[in-house]
Length: 105
Image 1 (cartoon, rainbow, N blue to C red):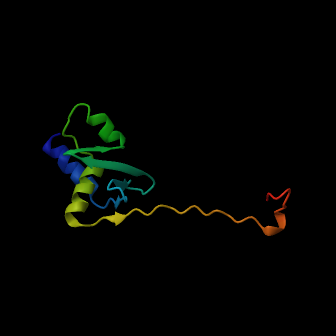
Image 2 (image 1 turned 30 degrees about the vertical axis):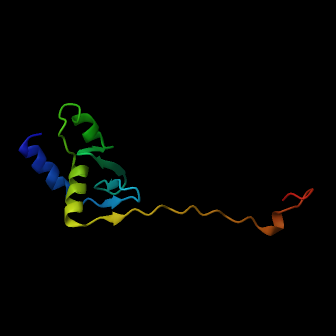
Image 3 (image 1 turned 45 degrees about the vertical axis):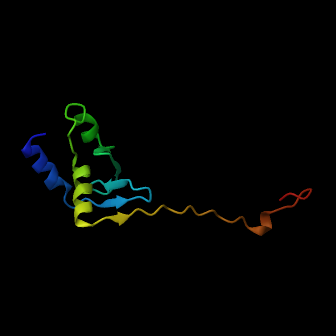
């Protein structure tokens, strides 16, 4: 990756929202907020689920996409939100519709 490419990705990474999961992985929202990319760090290695990373890591083992750079910057600046899981609402069946047949509802 050239210095110019790194500078462009650094600039593109600004303003991306970084979220941390309970297990220590990170998610980064796309610029439009429609996609979450999964970022995994471990043993001086990193990976991202974005197409830019998947395409370019094959040619350059040190490649960093804007999402990875966003995580590095957010960790350094301590600007990480906690990703909270969505609680699934289980609707309660109306008691009027429950019939007991041979001891089973």
